[in-house]
Length: 305
Image: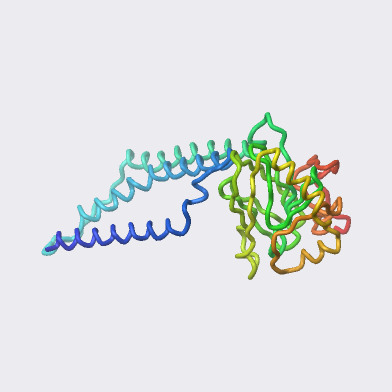
């Protein structure tokens, strides 16, 4: 009776687990972070897999021993023996349960450091990169293209197969810029310019969002990253330059107010808008000697400090 009950309960648990997986998989056709579409995301996925495997080396044996010990040394009905434990130690076991985690941490630490430092460089060296300046607002995203002198709101277009360096800041509270299929998150912080390399290997549309809670409009801080062949990207930029209105200082101040916004496109913007935004919020820059658009983005304090 006990065996039938145990097997029946295990069967129900398995069915519930399978149903949960089916339900979760119905939320989207794929898990975005496990569908890398660029070299940065691929490196990060390899790091995730390595971390999971190394953790499993510890977790699986520990859970197996837990089940074995609970079953082997359980208190059976009718057992009247006194509880008289004998305390002892084992040098071999001490070496195992201290040595294995130390080795795992060492392997994971070396690989993590190697991967992290590789991500501060362009994903590929033989292709000229482009730069896009990103400003998080409440509750929308502003993208500026210094080379093309255009700007967009709540969507960004990039050339496929080309490294893109995003310069990130915030003109409101701190947020986090995230395109799961292309790479990990990077914070946007007032008064600072963070940097993030991403690249899309193939043309397509990729989901992006703010990954840091910023108030009631946070759920709407989503954007699309549209990757196009270089020729189509150049054509799009030229069309924007010809047909879209200009983003003036007054329009920017209106855009920066709290509230939602639809997709927008601008043929120009104030030349120092990005740098002025950083300076206005504290003037701290990410790294000494960081240059962009002819401006030295070196570490400096605001004149008011």
